[in-house]
Amino acid sequence: MKKILVTGGAGFLGSHLCEKLLAKGHEVICLDNYFTGSKRNIVHLMGNPYFEAIRHDICEPIDLEVDQIYNLACPASPVHYQYDPIKTVNTSVVGAVNMLELASRTGAKILQASTSEVYGDPQVHPQPENYWGNVNPIGIRSCYDEGKRCAETLFFDYHRQNKVKIKVVRIFNTYGPRMMPDDGRVISNFIMQALHNKDITIYGSGTQTRSFCYCDDMIDGFIKMMESDDSITGPINLGNPHEFTIRQLAEMLVELCGSHSHIIHEAAVQDDPQQRQPVISKAKELLNWEPSIQLREGLEKTIAYFKHTNTK
Ligand code: NAD
Ligand code: UDP
View 1: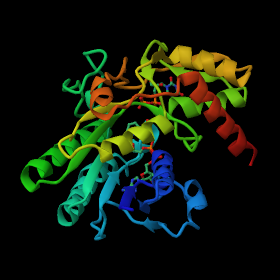
View 2 (view 1 turned 90 degrees about the vertical axis):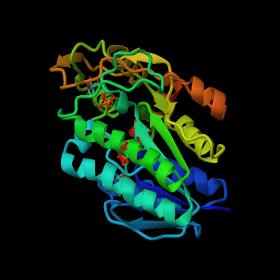
View 3 (view 1 turned 180 degrees about the horizontal axis):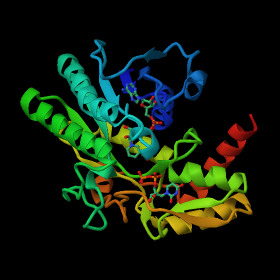
View 4 (view 1 turned 60 degrees about the vertical axis):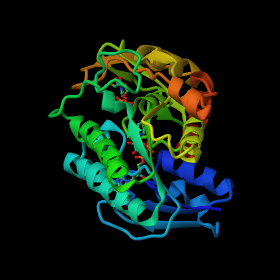
């Protein structure tokens, strides 16, 4: 049994991770400031004697005894990370320093939830890990993109300078139950709109692409990465390589929800990446990982969750 810290543990991915780690027999400390997460996501874990939730902001240092740290704390949807961009940069950068200092002191392995956003609006397609990206350093997405890029820099500098055991995964768009219905991300927006027979709002032409991974597959990838040999530092892409246009996604959701919604177009958002698809050969080779749940199946499970939370 290991003692494992999950920052951002009350969020969408964090709560699934806490659940999976407890099921594997570990002791889990969830640390969260509840900015975008919710106690509702972890309330079912509260009675477990091996689970502990602490309200804490990772921009402040904390001292705990742990064997592993999963650093997930950071708002993830454009609406949320652009709400207070200075705080977003601080969470990624100061938060990473605090968690890396903790790892340095305790000797814990630490995994960073990085992102495909480090590739910006990519000029190489699909994106392998050795592509350095095309990021606007001063745009409205920069607080997130550059914050995450700087966090990666800190991870590798702590690894080289302080011998911290690091694991960096670059997460591509992930969806599933416990996404917040109002977080502005495309899957939650489209499902909510389709279920209420409201217009489905495509920003721009709808020809931009994303590759969507179901949350259970992603959590398996996190754990495989953490349990891999210490020599495997990453960065490693984790995501589902099946690529869809946003229009295809809208049409699929209208069909799966049995909706009467119309698909409409609104203004494109600034610096919106036009294409995104992970190369996952590293994850396949080094972690023996690849996603098993395809978009239609994952969307059905997600729609069922949204229907259930809707009726509450
Ligand atoms: P989320 O918003 O549901 O979860 C983030 C959690 O971090 C929330 O519970 C929030 O309250 C907490 N948090 C935010 N700032 C904090 C702070 N300063 N101190 C403590 N807690 C704080 O988002 P998610 O989709 O679960 O994302 C989890 C991680 O994965 C994030 O780091 C995100 O950048 C990364 N990621 C997610 C995706 C995706 O598609 N879901 C893609 C790429 C990267
Ligand atoms: N998008 C959209 N309508 C929405 C929400 C998002 O067309 O209601 C588009 C958005 O412009 C982007 C894609 O869907 O091209 C994915 O957006 P999301 O915010 O989910 O993730 P990210 O841009 O961070 O990948």
